[in-house]
Length: 56
Image (cartoon, rainbow, N blue to C red; front, side, top):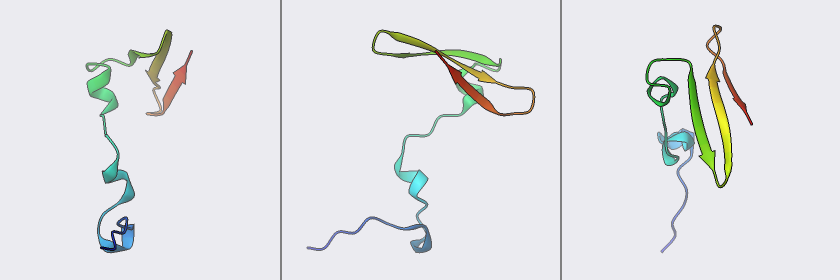
């Protein structure tokens, strides 16, 4: 059996294979959210220009 990963030209964007989260949902309508990774705490910020910044 030959299984291939779908490519964007096959109609399945690669990003659809990854978990997706809306930044607005993570920040509950605000512009800041904390994200934990192991014992580290990061801050996700949505800027006024609509960009994302992740800081430690």
